[in-house]
Length: 123
Length: 454
Image (cartoon, rainbow over all chains, first blue to last red; front, side):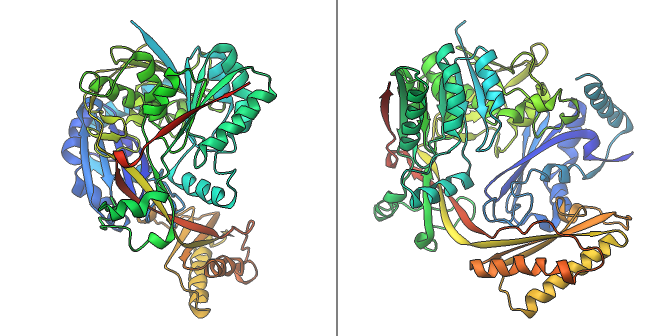
């Protein structure tokens, strides 16, 4: 199976509430969502972020939106008003998440690529 | 079916004004909500008010109202804003002056106050309430009581709704939740009440408020769709048409730029949310896990099946306290050996801080262009960078210590490797740390006063 970045398979958006960062991961198709629901586990995400996240990580599924919401506690250097991070409010945490690598069946990777291509081909 | 058209004209203090004017001029809306506040903003406004009792509101409200009020009057659009910040009463007085100077005739301005609970903190604690820190679990605020500078509860839509029922043209609040700016008008127009009957409809109002409250963030801003955003410099801000059965259609002004599709609505639904089945707001608890999104024509997304639960008995309160200072510096290094030069400079700064005895509570040095945004996840390779920067940031107890950090980076201007470059010096800034907590709803009596001008 090809190994691809999450960027190939999903969109993502992140933000802050105090020292807590949440990252919404939106699968590019229903079948990709089913794959991510199995493979994109809390353990996987914890290993990816390593020492960047000090607290608990929670995962919430949104089956209706083919999306997973990850809540990362202790991830923003104490929160926007006191953090030393340049990215005070965690806006780039979603793109750091998209660097995560997964093994995915080639046909799902193609399916996700077709979604990206159809979007970018027709505004 | 009865419906109401409500739009979002601002997401933060400093947002663009032109999309709000476009909404008022061209979008056939009945209400425009304006969020100007964030946790840090309230701390700044409280500090401003402490220095000058006639300050503490968002100063932008004056030029904004100069542009928006004449259009709103002509088109019968009602404006709801939390630009009152730490001083909604003074903000209303200033808006009244704007209306008078423009000769707009009689204008009713509803003021919403009561979110500031700082004067009541000790009394509440004496009565047995503890301000437990929701992030850290610490039991109460003993360790920070002496440094408290702000305590604002996130208040709900009740008094906004009442002002609208009483005929307010403009409603100006303090720290109303961003969301309540939208829930209030929807409750008023559609006759929705707190309680069992409308619990899903209030849930829908909260969900719709959440979708549009960050303005351009659902119409192409901050988006995975940035490549397909049309004329993004002319981005339109979002409009929600909300129906009395609790369904809604999200759109943006005809002919406006940006992009709005199911993806951008999804992006915003999961934005700054923890448990999506329990999105806690002062007016209720929305459940985002049941709703459906469907495309309703180009640039239009229909939202159906929104659910809610009754409003909580507590309100969130954000306590702000003085917590030292941050000193910061930047320097950049060019090819050849840009990365090695930056690493050399990072080491140099650490040695200098140690040698001069600067005490830091925390120090962070990023390599700009290498790992500043992705930290340890960023791949490190021997790429032949054209330029790499260092960003040094340190948190200290005193302003002098923070300034010493800033200064140390400027010393690289003359002492760094070949080609070291610098911009302008950055300023030391005070830190207001936040202590998120809860307060009983009944301890925050929200009050409303109608001011009439003209």
